[in-house]
Length: 516
Image (cartoon, rainbow, N blue to C red; front, top):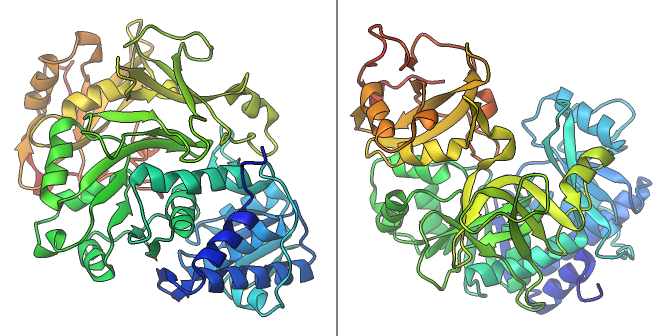
């Protein structure tokens, strides 16, 4: 589609429109769009001097900062495919990425141990080259790979095209109502799509400023937001819960933030508590690396609590995104209000997983992306998350979604958050186990929470096991890492099927919670 731009066109346009206006502030300095664009063109020259050509893979092992942006843009303008690795990753992970992609060049800081057969280069060395012209290309050309966990334990690489990036960069400002006067703040890692496509490219293309933090720090977050003049920030996973668990401070209301884009949707009362305490609008959305054109709750409408929103559209191209709820693995729509798999169709879909044709074919069928997420839709077109297809728990011949149990537990006034998984059952199939994190200063025992669930859930959805935790194992994007929660029996859990003294559980104040 000629209406979809490449990153070369997009980046040139931003540099031409706002050449001298400060754009990005990070730990390693501040730069305008024109400066970053020129540095990216220097990186093109540096990469070509190393023999990198269009279609080659280049691994980036860099922290959040201007150097990451320079190298990332430089790869895109070269026509190369960048593959970002968390700089905290173990050497073995870097080796698996290099092996999996066949990359010959690694852009990193000095003294980074890289696999044999690869060339280590710093961003400073790339920028020492003369600027070079960008490569020709199309919006369908791959621009980067985003890592995801694969079924074999090896990394799975999701292909992100130039068009996916530019369509998202053009759409995000309209979804949040961003203008040139806004200041976007993000602490999310640039090795993931959220910080790349939403905050970085979204701010670049609408004239807004970007504040790029090295990482999320709850202890300094509000002071940083205040001092940088941030007006919008992105949160994901447990970030808002971590902030909400801290003691109140004047700084949490001294900021200029008017909106926070976040996922997943909290339950109604928690949503309202967050907005009232911190003084901003909480805008809930849904996106994934396979398609950043997911769902969004309109920022100019009253919130629909618990909703992931309606299909995101493009401000210039109009309605380009469709969403359906179907029987998992099919294209057969379920009845309104029923739970099914969410599928998407739009021009910002991934072409697939690098080197994995079977997995690609499993999620891309007849032009639709099968997300693997369960949802339901109400009469007004609002979508509500109902779990993961792969997380479905099979219990006593019934299928249940962990999200159905989590929303009930999270509604308890003493509960901060919960995670529900299926664990092996002595009667075959699975049993339901709930992990619960309490709010600071509040307490509840297992019997109380068990009764709470019994009053609100049918018998087959009620947890058999319940365990309190002191904090969550988290992914890079601050989501609960359910795969790290124990499947085996533990001495501190409560088994509601037992008739011994463990059944009632012990009241555990939040300050004494166990760490999983």
